[in-house]
View (cartoon, rainbow, N blue to C red):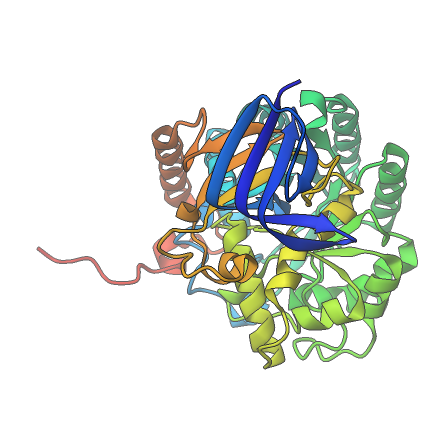
Length: 477
């Protein structure tokens, strides 16, 4: 066993059920665990690290990611959106992206994404998407902690004419995907000393049958894993569910018994009472009373002019709020900041959607969803998943309140070192073992192949330049 003592200027330690700031304190790591946090440590150590200019925080838990596709959202998803579909990119943009993304491109996206996660503070990620075996191998090699789930569903949405949304249903009700997902959970048990695990992720509330969701919930309980579902993520989806069932998406899931402490809803953005849908009800109370978590991914929506109403209201109702990235950039630093700011804008108040609330969402709240009292905190017995921030950098000074500075001002360059299970993943800003140039080149090539295939996947055969024109026209020589 190797014992390392870190004496740091600021340690965000966990005490009496909350994060607290320990000034000029000691943090002792024994192998993969935190052994001690306090002012002084009298015991013997193998290694002493004096870092008076560092802030030590728990690693961030990213509860909603699509590593195999998100990087290619860049320069495609911004500044465009059909009013017919309430500004979302889910109908015309996302399916066409996926149609043009080949498996080599998806692997390139995974390689790139893991570098991006590490250099922006994610130590644990919940990944939903394709090529799960490759993702599991890549997470293990990266040194990060990951939960991996292949998404499955009973059908898919599409637009035949740019005016309406229709659904194509599979005769097998998505059962092969469900069975593959449960089998993956079993195969990943104990992988990388428990650092890589599986969970279940039926894709979307409107693309999964009642039977598939009921069976998924039962399987998650039997397997002892979390379950994730995209729900209330678009205005058209909300109206589709009320048309089918006369119930909001959250109400329908409550009727099925799908909600619960190990359930996380991706987005849950458009709920009853929201001005976006103008539909009476109390979805927030259903989420809070059931213990269901919500993973909010603010940047994905606010770039389209869509604002949650509102993060402070969810917190006040008692909903366990977590954070994710969902799209590019896959930066929890950005997720913290946009969540705080968007919440204030929606509430028209500055004293809500605070740095404390969003930092909790990225750490202890997410650990609660996972049933992991050993994550998201710096306390004896917890995993040594740690972030070391430069307190004396240009963007972080002057330093008075480290949490406010992190939430409102930190940049990736302020993150010096990252440990997962006590092992270094990032040192002095460099992601260990990563070929950044190759990863960058890989996603560029993946994007170029996808762009060239755009008209093949578009409902009207349009080019990408037709759908998302360049910001400025080409210079004519």
